[in-house]
Image (tube, rainbow, N blue to C red; front, top):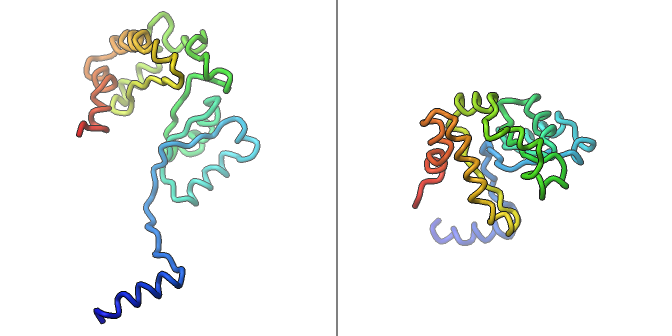
Length: 174
């Protein structure tokens, strides 16, 4: 039998039969459901596509956020909404100057609804700086100054979790 193993392997390779793929439930960390998709796929259809692909949960973002919210309303246990600060592709380069976005933290004051969510789920948030263009690196210091301002309006343990502890927990240093 020992000498026949190479022959069995060779026959298997030549037969073109691949080994069965593992069937693990998936957590997909990057799905979009933006405006162009809405006409082509209803929320129900998108959810059925994800289910058929074995996706148990998915982080979803969209432009505008309405697409994410449509999926979340239909499947709150399966969709993790990542809301974005721009409404159209044109906003992608200028959202940080948009007065509507600044309404999330008017005058540096944290919106009470966001404060409630942060306090209720402090282990689910991290700070993120989108430096999609070279020029954005120049504003990191100013951006982080604003982040520190609204973090200061949260209970210390919540602010520390969002500021750095969640990142350290999820991505420990080697």
